[in-house]
Image 1 (spheres, rainbow, N blue to C red):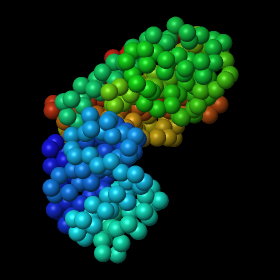
Image 2 (image 1 turned 30 degrees about the vertical axis):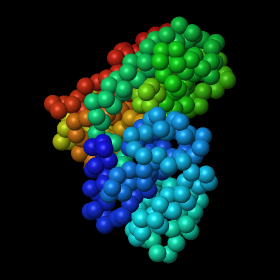
Image 3 (image 1 turned 180 degrees about the horizontal axis):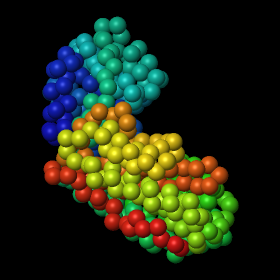
Length: 355
């Protein structure tokens, strides 16, 4: 049994539960190693049981670190049958993850004799602090992401479309070892860079503007995340000034990362710098987020997140400033919280390079 599983089982006793049904794919993988698209883990005081369907019989047997039960039909119904045999009376479920149709099937299958208890992000809380193996996987993912950017930059020039650049970036990620992009790649040029989550468009990019690239690789199941901004020729002076301010904010927030400080404190360091430059209203999102098996994990590096950072957490630091009609700047690294402070894992330069 893994340490994470033992901690989760201990929580059952604290919550006075007989079992906990885990259905989120990332949480299923974290607890069992199973990577299939249909899995449910029953966490009981005696241990873990993985439920899946016949498509994954072989895969689950190879990957799972716990007993596997193959079921036809809804997995929640099969898990409910186990609950009936065990005569469990209180069963928890992931309230923020289980879809309503699965909840309804589970509720109807368990019947009135069993109390369903909604539970918060118990597994996600365990996942915040990464093991040495997880950190190694994230390091590889970060390196792959940076190598992919380097390999794709030669195709970036005026006249090429945002979509073509995004396609080249994702192709290079796979060439360098990633199984997929960690999220839909963002490529935005000129005024469109003021859209924090711009979708790459069909229009050719033009000279003398900024180009924003936000990309992440998924390798060995673990995500990386990086944003860099480039000048296509000579970018407008105001945008170069904004770039310097955002870089200062990113460096200030990164310098604040260490065990014992809150996520809100780190966020505040970035906001303080941008406010001093008159860009407070232009910073419209949080300073960062955790990542790992998913691209967005706890903690959220935001103004209201009181999570205390601990060694082993991996987060992004990505302040930005966006001016409608002109453009935007975001600079992002993947950062590891270490026992003595932090380590910036992203090796790519943050200099404003002209392409």
